Length: 491
Image (cartoon, rainbow, N blue to C red; front, side):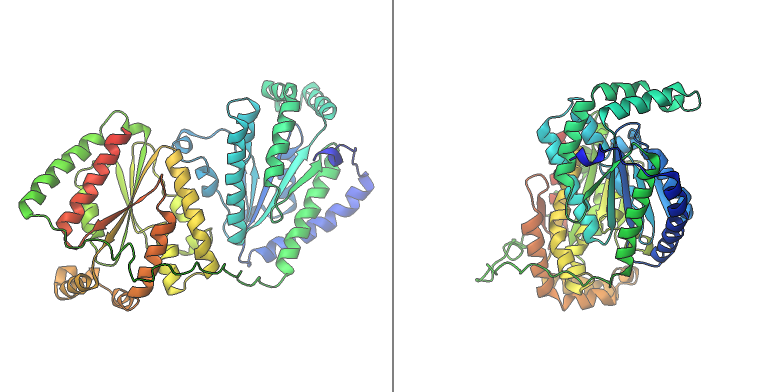
């Protein structure tokens, strides 16, 4: 994979002096055209130590307008980042549409380092790379242009480069003991890196291996490829919405589905409700003060038909919690800032630290519910969202987050009764909108979307809890029982 980057590629000063001014002008033009486009550019700069990665990044910032470039030089994760899934730090730093994001150090760095040092197995690296490939494919399907540059030096050239930098007092600071340690492990790093690149060099996001022996050749190559790919994307017509795969065949031929199978007649006596509510709230409070609670974060997700009692259920949970430990995220239509990012970005940014609780009043499932039914996204978008959501939740749980997902269900008749009560009760009017009434007319479409969602995203590590909420008392107690039981198991 690296043989073509060990041929001693060079260009002369005459070529450099002639080509660079032309290239810089063209890059600036393309960058300004990008500012009005509907896609971001993501550039990864990776490679061996001493291969001029930082210098290449600095050159790109020099050749273009740095006001429209977001540059990230990533070292070890901070304490805040380590308390969340590994990909959290990268999701936060994604550039919005119309901007360029450059990563010197990326989602490849730590999986490669961990495997090279023997702290993980080859199977772990393969799993990490499969996850990375899915992440990059998601970025591309969301519209991003992804460019991945690997700066390569042969072993002898790397040794000569490190010695040269170390010998010069002006550049000695750039060579660390870690660089020499990595040089001693050159063959191991080469083998691990080649496996990682081979697994993630896809048709839509191929790795571009650049020989770094001659800095002029290296930087001119990167600049020209960036210009070529960016110009090609800017000049092509707006791509058509990709066709969605055919829907699966209908299987509920008898009219039975998971929602209709729920027993909505379940009830709880008022006194029993009040007694058990206090008991469960007390247990929940003690569990959040357990010494092991600080090793976990908790994510509670509430979905359900309008007026199913999400808000009331959430209030019974927060009554038991220290206000410093939780945050409620009411999810509405995305803002302009959020629309400039991939769909899941707005949820990644709200993931809690260890010892904290994040409560989502509606969630990332909006894409496969309201956006699907109301036509706010393409069919291809909501169909691929199932796997993206499952991958997101898998990363959450594997990072020691305790995830609980609740679907609150009521009948059409009960929903109508609650709507009318809200309409006629002055202090409840804010809870009912014209949109709520319109959604009632699409009950069958929402029911089909909900059943699809439950079938495709209720997994072994992140199952849905279906809550019969016709009786609010019964529904609230079922939710609290589920949370307490889960925390007791985990802590």
